Each structure stands twice: as C-alpha cells, then as structure tokens.
Length: 162
Length: 188
Image (cartoon, rainbow over all chains, first blue to last red; front, side, top):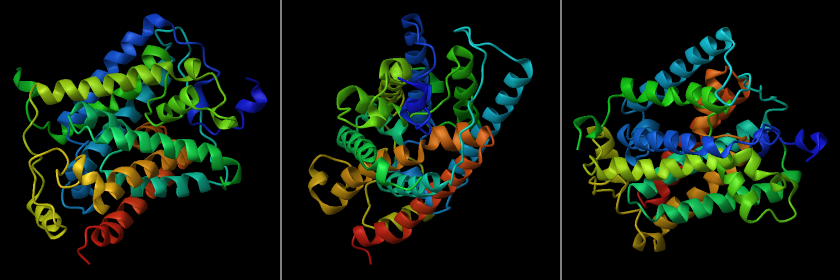
C-alpha cells in the first residue's frame, strides 16, 4: 500500500498498516491481555446493559468513576512513558500518533450514532464480545450487525462529510 | 474459585485496571488500545469488496487486535464461569425506571426480556440487537474509535477529536435513553 493511499485513512482500520508486522511470538501476549480485559469488563460490570442504563440516567457514580479513573491512570502512564522515552518489547520507540481533527464532523456525527447504538445494545464493541463469552449468545447477531454497519460505512465513506 | 474473581469489583479497582491496558499495549508492542478497529480488520479480511477503506494489509495492521479480541471473548467466558452469575446490583431508581419500561427480570447481565433469541423477533429485541449493533459498527467506524479508543486512549492523550467523539457518545446515548427507548418499549 502506498503512503498516498494510507494518508487518506483517518485512523480506523488502517492506522497501524504502516507499522512493523507483529511477530507471531507476540500474539499469545495480546491474547492473554485480551483475556485479562474480558475478565475486567465482566467483573467491573461495564458490559452490562443495566449499568449502561444506570449511567445514562445519572443514577450511579459507578460508570463515571470507572471511566474517569481509567482515563487518569492512562494519562499518567502516558506522561511517564514519554518522559522515560521507553522502547517497546518489540523494539520500537513508543509513540502515539496524533489524530488529526480535520473538520471534526466525523467525530461528532459518528460519535453520536455510536452513542445511540451503545444505549440500545447496552454494549460497546469490547463488551459485545465479552457478552458472548458471558453466555448472552444472541450478541453474535449484534456482532454480525456491527460488522455490517462497519462495512456499510466503508461503502458510504466517499459520500459522507468528515 | 478464588475470592477475587467473585462479584463486582469497586469502581476504583476496575477503572485503574482498565486504564492500565493503555501503557501495557504500548510497552508490549507500541500499540494503541482500541477495540473497534477490529471490526474493520474483520471486514477487510472477509469481504473487502472494491472499497478502498478495506483494501489494506489487515494481517499487518490488525492481527494483534484480533488476538486481543479473541481473548476478550475467552476472558468473558472465564470470568462468568468462575465467579459470575449473580445479577447486577443497579440502583433502586434505575430499577424503578426500567420497570416502567417493562423490564422486570434483573437476574442477568443483560435483560432476558430483550437479549434472547426468541426476543429477537419482537420490535424491542430486534431494534436493541440488530439496529443497535449496526449503529455501533457504523458509528465507531465513522468516528474512527469507540469507548476504548476515544474515551480512554484518546482522552488520556488529550486529543480534541476524542473529546468531541465522547460528547457525541453521550448525546447519542441520552437521546436513545430518553426518546427512543420509551417509545420503543411502548411506555409513551
């Protein structure tokens, strides 16, 4: 893929397309991290439709506490990592590519559309998969639907404002 | 099973643990924490069509995402089978509000009245699962990120684009909660 084509992506699927290929030896590490994340999503109950409803009705501090403390933890970690100039285990200089704002329409419009889906399904993409693991097997349909949604976005992308 | 796996974890344990996935993925492989890009990788792998958006090397870009995602499913299974099963302890106010929408079964992680195969053929089941799922996939692709990519990674990196996206998440979520769902659940 050429750089010219790559630059047209604004950072969804192809954002890592120019990064070095992941060595197969690393895949089990990502699998293990994913397992840990699935456990956290379940035990924190952020994958629950009930918790999402409680959040959007402002009837508990819980979800706000979770998201807020997650952001603070991640932000402090990023500052420390940048200050230390760390390299990753895979040998790359750690850097987080800045996402260009552009006109910002895609973030406002796409974000709002996702928000409607988040409330209706009670799940964002990670929890959709964790819920299948939790035995809510009908979420397989929601995942297929989400794939269809992503695919239709790819189809309509040239005609949508970004 | 071990006691730490049981029940719900308090927010001040769960939140920092979620936040730690950002440095963990950076330190392991210089990867930015985000789930929704996996949906694009799956599309690129299965049905790229003629769309430029899906024409990239999904193995190079996203094999790690897909390994992580497979783990999320397994992790959900493990957490559920070794210590899960009890209902979600939501607030009394939320129970009352949901009862007015016709939700009376609070025993699962998601209401059985909506998220079962048989309920899929009802209006509220279809809209919640099929339409909701579609909007999750379309919206996260359009916004180039979801809760993990924008609300956690993006906000932690002080990105204005992510702040706008997160405000959109809540605008859409509130609209669905207060306008679409009461109508959908027949309580208007």
